[in-house]
Length: 351
Image (tube, rainbow, N blue to C red):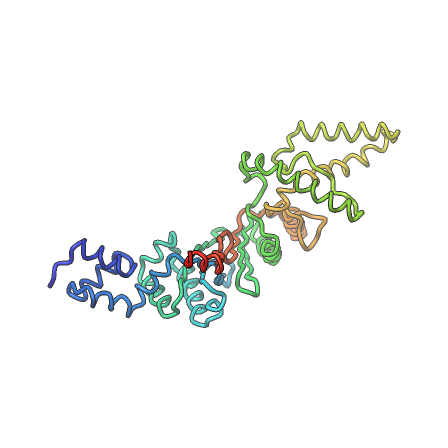
């Protein structure tokens, strides 16, 4: 048996771009013969798969599995380079089996999943498909308590999946609220929230977003003015995180000052002020309504936020409920796709 040195492993890795451990295994199997080891890797698709490492896998599918008793749900995103491969039956089966594996074994992360025997199966399946394929991310939520309600939704294109979980006052409320949570998951699928509540925003993030978002509304108003359409109110703020008691008190004082200047009788101010203050809050929380699930306008009832809609559904069931966690995965979200400039490439080669 030939001695397998670190230099030999390094040389084989340079020649094939295969992972280090696979190179060592190939050399062991082939008794140190570099040519045979290279062929061994290629036969198993390892070298071929590894050479695709610089390609961008931004297409693919999500997997979704939920327990029959709604006690547990898993979502997985698996990426491919092309939409064509995502439609391949072999790829679809790989997504299904990967979802089942994660649901059953609850691995800590992608790396620990790949370190199992299933990881070897995944690598072999990728080699057969012949394209770069990645397990990008996954999540599992569990309703460990009978007062926790859980439900989810996968969009018909299998590119978006959502799990929503709520804490309720009783098992009765949890059972009753579950269909509502599927509606909330469908809402999240369409409205793309990034966080649960405005309370999750970092202060620096809110500050950095404020100027840009206000300027965007001003520019939008320029276009609305050109079209002779009603203008949007230009806000001072963009998040409830900025609306301190002092800010709200000042806004209320300004509303009352306007009513006084309009000679509105003070006896009716209490009927006008709440509505105008609510409008002030609405105008000054655009960041929340865009990115925070509970603060978004509920798509099935635009008079309510998602939080209010869940609260109302729980009240109808005779209890209380609050969404405490959600997971939303969308294929390719946040991945910068490579745009090939063929003309530039040709010009560079001719230069």
